Length: 236
Image (cartoon, rainbow, N blue to C red):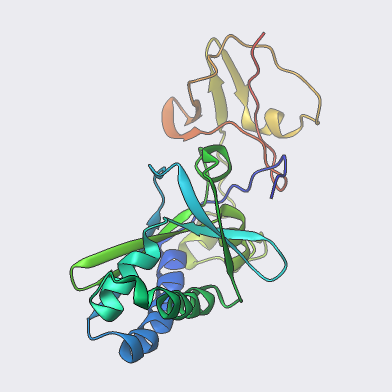
């Protein structure tokens, strides 16, 4: 997954809920067979992991789709066997791999690697953390940004509008992007072509502002994207 363009995607609560239901439906039958614990899942936007070494998860085609901490198998062994004895290690890893493959709906392999923070945790990253809780024991998986995007519906401008959206569909809003000492109408910004340059003194570490009639609607993150226009601010 050493690609220049990183995936960016806003994920709404209904999409999080749908993915959570899938993981819950996979976890429950596995848990009923292998443990005596009650089990639950939670899915949330991932914060940068503290671990430096990880177990990367690869699918059958060699694509990186997630990672777990090296203690993942140990935690599950304690849940399944109630023991940390090495005599359970082999069968525990087999049972744990069965769970991982079911969650990702693919046959997975693991490989210990150094965590590349920039690949997983960046502004706008759709990386998600999947937490598995068994009574008092919680362990997590991190879902690769590109894998997450592939599980979500493709955003389309042809989606049906809600009644409220329909009533406002003809309403024209004059939006503008505000950089330090520079303001540009959003309509003009959208006409820019790749390679065209706007010179500004806007700091690299400050977000841009999307405004309507002096009211700030949201901040605009800078970056690169293969599916949408984006804004890059480079140093002199």
